[in-house]
Image 1 (cartoon, one colour):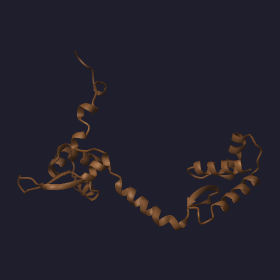
Image 2 (tube, helix red, strand yellow):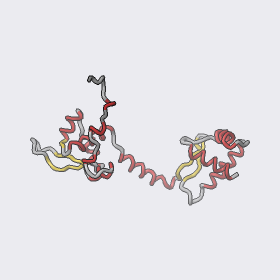
Image 3 (cartoon, rainbow, N blue to C red):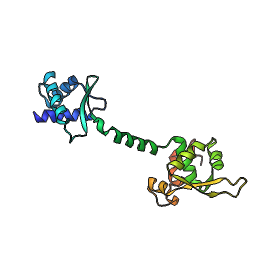
Image 4 (cartoon, rainbow, N blue to C red):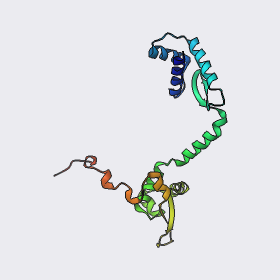
Amino acid sequence: MKDIMLNIEALIFASEEGISAIEIKNVLQDALLIEINKDEVLSFLDKIKLKYQGEDSVFTLSPINNKYQFLTKVIYHDAINQLQAHRDRKKLSQAGLETLSIIAYRQPITKLEVEQIRGVNCDYSIQRLLEKDLIKIVGKAESIGKPLLYATSDQFMNHFGINSVKDLPQLKDIINEENSIGEIIE
């Protein structure tokens, strides 16, 4: 009996979008080679729901659209929302990654130089990289208008697990003979 209940819990846990009682019944019959009906499955589901209703559990069994899934209890939603906010802040767009790599390999560099390499405006990308503390302002260039110079920060080194920009992969490390286009003429 306990083995069946644990198998049902495992099925619910492994189901990304929930699992119906009928699906649980069919999977258990195939996996455990047992006969079980829908009412027995529903009885086990009720026991599992009771098991997770206590204060020592952070999630609960919830039926949504006739499918069962484990969901975090409402009391923990503020903490989970904060986690999502932190994770969202860490993500970089493709434009952000391109801008960051140009700065990393060409530092110190001005915004205009980055834009000339990328061919597009980089205001937003540079602002986001500054907010994420992946780059920093290291001074002003001696050219007309004295534009700001950007370089990678210590946070950049920590984030990518390197000690200095010398540890960045070099072009020769990335490109190999098999990546060439066209025929090699000898």
